[in-house]
Length: 388
Ligand code: GLA
Image (tube, rainbow, N blue to C red; front, top):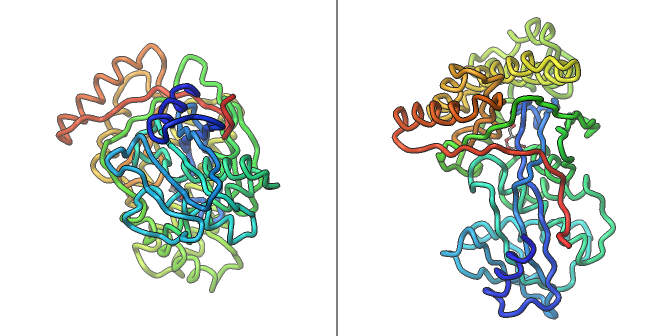
């Protein structure tokens, strides 16, 4: 891949003298959805697919960005002195935001760069292409400019960037999962204090299959920020009767005891998802540790139902995929992953049934929705690195 990236760089910038090549993974969340901004637990892992960048420092302060995935947008040029959000810069607002954030936090980047990006995760698929570009860029800055910054801090700065530069109030899950990825492990992260533990994902005779609904979405135009503020409203009402800092502080029994204080049907549903999903995630990791993979899969299915009925972020596309998956032989668990409103589902499928799974779910989806879904059998990979 290093050579491919160098040849892309050559195509765009004319030579490859002094160019370095980097990679950062995409991520998939196995369980714990919409819990990260509620002080709950998440259980994501990094993938072996993701985004590559070929980059070279410049002698001036100019920034030249090019994406092989958005060739139609051509070269996007700006400078270190003009790090402001500009709609016409499209995807390049992600790396720009990271540069802006680093500067704001006194990490010195004093030279411009030429960068070519290429991602092999489907854009807008919910495998977190935005966080992927952000963490990749943060890692490049650390390495090229010799910054003393650890991976957790890079994740936090990238989240800051997405929140404050791109206007999406995302939690920490995606950036953390990408920065801290570990081959064949998922990350059990408590978002209330960033304590985490790696759990081996040993699926035996099964694999992770991701299905992209091909329904495009961006978090900016989704109801993501609305859901977040509904949780905040529910929390404020609960805090009148319970001494809690986040919805993640509540057990299921406490939630059932206090929920009447919320006094609004929609807000009760949103909070119920946040509380139950957090507890489900804790249980799921326990089940996995006890090698009760079927129980883990059942909790994945329950997670989807809660996201469908209480959190209302699935939509017909993701429901069609999950509901078809549940009917197939050899399926251990299936649920939407990421923010929802389109994007992907994650499925654990026994090896012997993967072909029939792809055929049957693919058919159900095309019949029901009118266009095709894409299937990816994925592997769990490491965090960001330079390709030498
Ligand atoms: C997006 C956000 C994450 C998280 C998920 C939902 O991926 O970036 O922070 O909130 O949605 O679990």
